Each structure stands twice: as C-alpha cells, then as structure tokens.
Image (cartoon, rainbow, N blue to C red):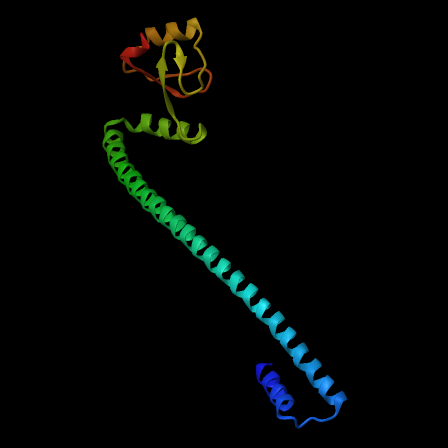
Length: 173
C-alpha cells in the first residue's frame, strides 16, 4: 500500500496527469490509501497488544503448569515411598505370620483359615469387656460363664459370628 501510495503521489507531483478528473481520482485514491494504511496500522497495533497479552497469559499459565507438575512429582514420590513402606511392612508381617502359624496346631489353623474366608478376612476376634470385637456384639451372661469356665487352651467361639474368641488379660476373664 505504501508503494502504491508513493507511486500515485509521484505521478501527482510529476505533473504527468493533466486531466482534472484523473487528478481528482488520483487524489481520492491517495487519501483512501492513507486512510486504509492508518486503519491497518491500528489493526496491527491491536494485534500486537493482544499478542503481548497472550504471551503474558501463556507465561503465567506455564508457571502454573510447572507448579502443578512439581506438586504431582512430589505427590508421586511420597506415594512411591509410602508404597515401599507398605510393601516392607507387608513382607515383615507375612514373615511374622508364617512363624506364628508354624506354632499353631494344624487343626486350629485350618479352622481359622476357614473362618477367615467366611468372615471376610477376620477369623478371630478379641474378647474385650464382654464384647466380641469381630461382630461388636456383647456376649450374654451364659456365654460369658462358658468362656470363663473353659480351660485356657480351649478354643472358644462367638455365638453370634462364630469367630474364634481371643482371650487376653484385658478381657477380664
């Protein structure tokens, strides 16, 4: 547009155009080109402002993404550490269980395993303050008297949930 406007201005200034109508048209075209150039410059300025704003926003969002990625990495490392800790604890508990299970008579261990499967993973429960901690039911007086009368090495079971009751010194029996 600038080249065209410069060329038209040069034609106007050179005096090559002599017809008044052509002169008027040429002046009108130069004016129109100048207005169009001004409008385009305004559009360019607006686009540049938008671009600058978009770049600022992109920088801000990039910072936020980096922050979130840092938090994700931190959470992932904490999760992995917790998983390793859980795995280590599970291995330790498994070894302890194997040692303990080796000391338990085979028929009692078979009963425990059967009950554990039936009761959703818990085959034995502590008897505490007249209550079976497996089903959370309080034992009736007659049941408590039977438990009290049973020998210490006798396997006693909860009448409600059928789990093996583990008697401890805290049970008061």
